[in-house]
Length: 265
Image 1 (cartoon, rainbow, N blue to C red):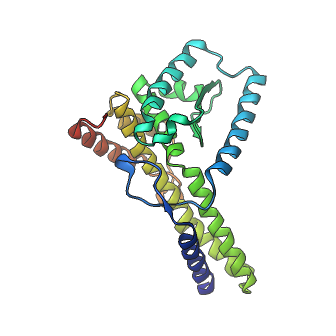
Image 2 (cartoon, rainbow, N blue to C red):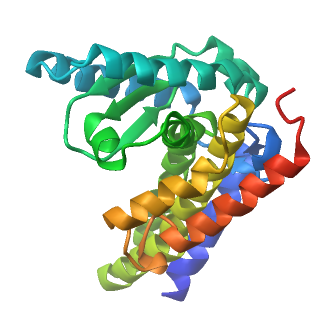
Image 3 (cartoon, rainbow, N blue to C red):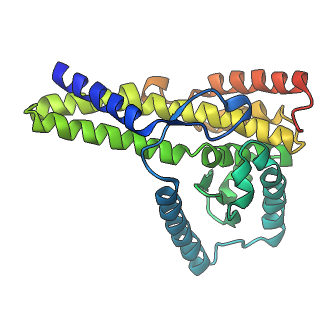
């Protein structure tokens, strides 16, 4: 087990030295260096392909942008958020943004790398959000793309798999490798994902503030999510923070943004 841990540490250190660190956005989220071993082009190409497949499937099923009024609402909110995104990440103005609504019961929305956004009608029907609350959800998803979290997670997985391969070549037995993999999952990958979720809440709320939406909608969204029972898992085994922690974090951020003022420049 010790050999596996040492191997993981050495591989991570080597990756950091070879790759350097990145900082993808400015604003409240700045300060954390990001490890990037996979190129933006690779992630964007894969994301665009996956997005096209989702859209093609929805179009064939007749579930793509079925309600014109609802689609206009979502796209108008997205337009306001996209307009201010370059304030946090200048090159976002050059992204090929796309926004679609899919008629499906899933209570979800997402934004793939490069600005490919989907909102499911199940989210709108379940939350019955105000425009500001819907902007919170969309801003959060856009923040994942602006911070290139998928690229960062791919890089983290690259390190883990590489380290386990090296450990195997060094003669570490399968049982120890399995334990090492589990330790990496719980001790590295899950907290890493929770950090992304908290960071996306931060960037997303700043984004909606710059777009002129009420930031108090942030904690309100997660009060509604909590009532739906969206996340009841223990933090240590979850990729998302608990609802209570999320609400507290967003409430504090909303206060900071309102006190600071003038952050829309």
